[in-house]
Length: 111
Length: 116
Image (tube, rainbow over all chains, first blue to last red; front, side, top):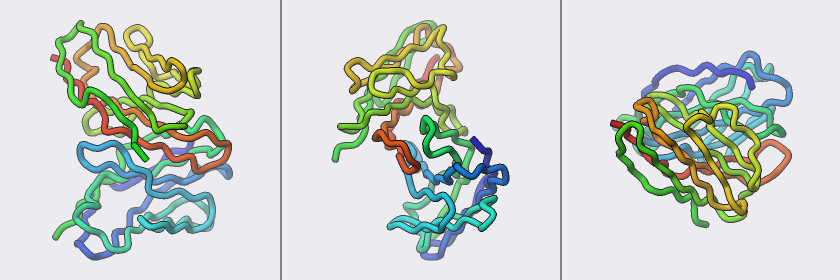
């Protein structure tokens, strides 16, 4: 599975959009981009995934560049409860579904 | 829908003792995972089951760690004997079977193990 690069930490004001970047320059054509988050003392939580097209669900939007070498997770109106470590993961969708977590980005939403 | 259940939530043992963790996945989920998360790091996959068969145990320290999933439902992870470096949160996750991208994993709350 391709490796990802994320900033160690980011800050965001409550109510503003949080944009979390992820680089995955070695991504293969059959690898999906997944985002999970982990709130303190909880297990990771699935947020969203995509292959080529931009995706949106009730939690977030995922923007994938045309060359697929990077992506951005957007939380449109961040709240204090969105403070968490956000993991960007790429993996082959039809493989054994293993998730390889990096260190992620600690997003702190400030009042 | 009930989530992934794990017990105990916390465990403190001395080195060289043994410990066991239990996981009950979401009903109907064929795939079950055990992860180890050391403080400050992302979770690392230890073992993956598909029904009651092992799919991937390449990162499981087999000299001290063992896991089983009898009847393809509940699973136990055992450490014997424990070392100081085994102090971590042990996470269980499950996912439904499928052969295309999008099989998200659902995680339990984890068991925090402290080895003294």
